[in-house]
Amino acid sequence: MAISDNLHRIQDRILSALARSGRTANSVTLVAVTKTVGIREVQELYRLGITNFGESRVQAVEPKKGVLDSGVTWHMIGNIQRRKCKDVVRLFDCVDAVDRIELAEELGLRAGDRPSPLPVLIEVNVSGEESKHGFAVEVLPQALEQMRAIAALQVEGLMTMAPFFDNAEQARPIFAELRTLADRFGLKRVSMGMSNDFEVAIEEGSTEVRIGSALLE
Image (tube, rainbow, N blue to C red):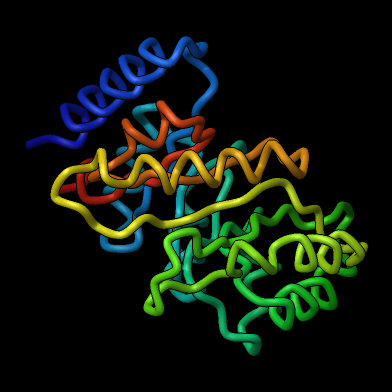
């Protein structure tokens, strides 16, 4: 199936989820996760109006950036090794999965020469799964305080990944808890929801969804 058909279908589902939750049509950002595809697919998505792209590897983003015009936001969505922070700061517009203080400190050090602070999201392990990255809910207040003290970073919100459920409804409590945490701390960006559960995430207040397989397969 063509990317354009997939995109239109996903956009319709996003609009329906927004309508069910009484939200406006422009209150969710679609981040196209392009880590499994090449330049041609990225160019096609851009032609179709997508301006937010998610990548998880430094070496994959540079050639893709080079073929697009300005007005594109590149999201680092993967786990970051500290030695890669210099390149991450150089190549990405925001970091959507800061999962430990040591990483935040290194990003802050490397982002010191930027004209404005680097936007970041704090990854929260709401589900408590050992296999998931991110801060435990109970240590989030302390982590947020420490990260807000890093001048070169701008903490804009929270993100989480729910476990994969056969029934996306099972993820609803996880999404609801992240939204509650974001509201508690006055954070506007709430990144949650992927190909298998983004509609439930939107209904629970997600402001950006990360879609890969449903868009590109």
